[in-house]
Length: 197
Image (cartoon, rainbow, N blue to C red; front, top):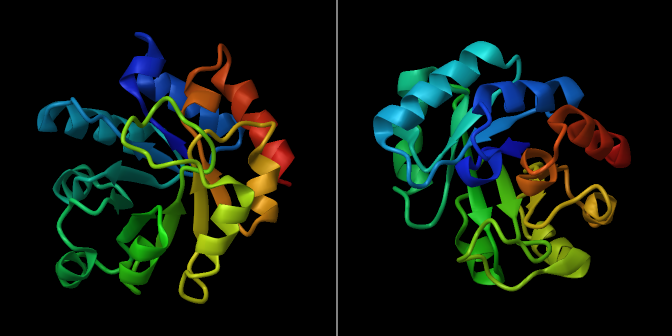
């Protein structure tokens, strides 16, 4: 999963960068734009849905995801409760949840389509992230997910350490800097994909 970040894009076109990442092997794109206006996020999401042949998710904003025709949304603990939203959403609409501690794992809704667990390693792209879990901490949280729920590692993931998170039980990984910060996002995504195979 490649997550957008306007700062790391450094003026490059988000759609072009994400398309390159998908060509390199990214299988999901998540729109995360904390300071973007709803109109800006909607415009970007619509453009990505049109341009990328993989599911596009929207961070925090179920309403924007629905309006843009996105595949789903990723929710944090300050967003509306996943279980309250689920009955009002189309069948197949993906809802993921962030899990960063045993307490969050205990309270995570059983109906989440996936868990995003982290931060796995130190990360400069999320200032409110907790202490790094490392592979062992990730594995401990991943084991708490309901049976059959995919668990994605996030936070400081690079081609050098991604394999350790997969070996710890991750279904996949979410990256920001490892792809968006690269001079060639396609090659960076391909390198990550190869390490995960």
